[in-house]
Amino acid sequence: MPAPHSSPLAEELAPAVLDRLLRYVRVDTQSARDRTGCPSTPGQLELGRMLVEELREIGLGDAEQDAQGYVFATLPATVEGAPVIGLLAHLDTSPDESGTGVEPLVHRDYDGGDIALPRGGTVLEPEQMPELRDAIGHDIVTTSGDTLLGADDKAGMAEVMTAVAHLAAHPELARPTIRVGFTPDEEVGEGATLFDIERFGAVCAYTLDGSALGELQDETFTAAGADLVVHGVDVHPGFATGKLVNASRLAGRILAALPAERTPEATSGRDGFIHVYAVEGGAGTATIRTIVRDFDDDKLAEHVAVLRDTAERVVAEEPRARLDIDVRPQYPNMRVYLDEHPRVVEAAEEALRLEGLDAIRTPIRGGTDGSVLSARGLPTPNLFTGGHEYHSKREWASVQEMGSAAAVAVRLAGVWAGQAA
Ligand SMILES: [Zn+2]
Image (tube, rainbow, N blue to C red; front, top):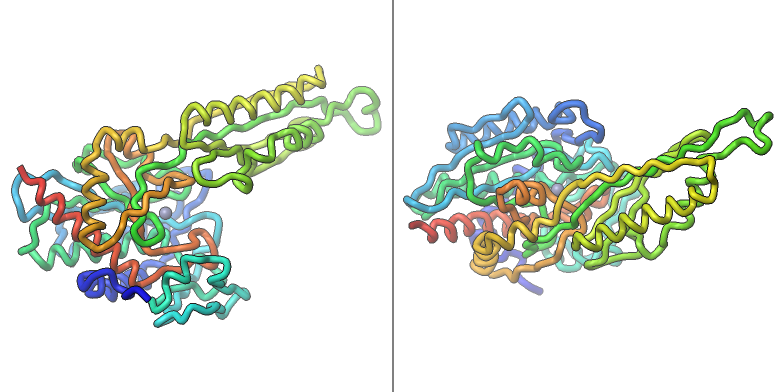
């Protein structure tokens, strides 16, 4: 069995990361889709205020939260001439699962068996989640079974906090100026939209928002959203003979005609998909809401074309019906932008190596704040946090892996300090 800690530094940092995680997850920061302001929910402001206070206690005196909920702070350099780097995590948790009344549990020295949680009949089975097998001998943090944990991304947040606290307490360690940023509404795709890159003032940043030990992600999906609206002819069913054109029935035919092999449930690895996530309607109009994803822009365009052609073909069979299609870009694959700044990913690889970890380079079948930030000019790859099974009641985190993530952040500072002019 491998040693549970990747280094003495990770072992030293792990208890502080755990302590912070246990405090942060108790604040309900679930974000909301269809937001009317930023942040979408007040809990994110509350957690942000806690973090500002804590950052100031650590010695980051300029810590502040802006009106939109973004928390920025600076840890000044101990060497001159090194580029300013950023460490980022997001404040919110997923709208997909309740974040109210999270009561975290710590299971010490995990033995490799099922972990039955006290509420909701929730069980963590290594059979279903092989990553648990890699965590034998670790201390595992779970929920009580009826909420998500919020390690996504409060593990990342606890790791950033613990890394900067460690660096602040050790001025003898060489470090560049580090900008800390905590962002609202990442889970609803808005974390980067109001992020003030100029005010942040870093040449690059790292989100701690990944999962398994060693993950270093520089590639995300390119994403688009597409809504199809079918307009039929609504007539009272009693007088409908030969007149009614039922939009919902047409929508059903479109759904049936969409290729089953291009769905999230039928694809993996580098293959993209068309995902129908909502259908609503009546006889008069019906709306099919989809997201379309691929790592390759041309293939993304092809999925969109398939969606469009399928819908148009079905609706064309009924000349009295009409179809509207609205396609909008959501976020880009960050790879193109990161390729222009190879040093950013190289530095992360070096930090992982110094921590004794192999970089695991899996493309993200999703997006992160880093996708949009990289496109907007702040190259931002993603690092692991040690959290697993995100957005679910089975979410868990390894204390040892969290210690490793905080240690990687500390080592990243050392790597960039070595870049001093
Ligand atoms: Zn996240």
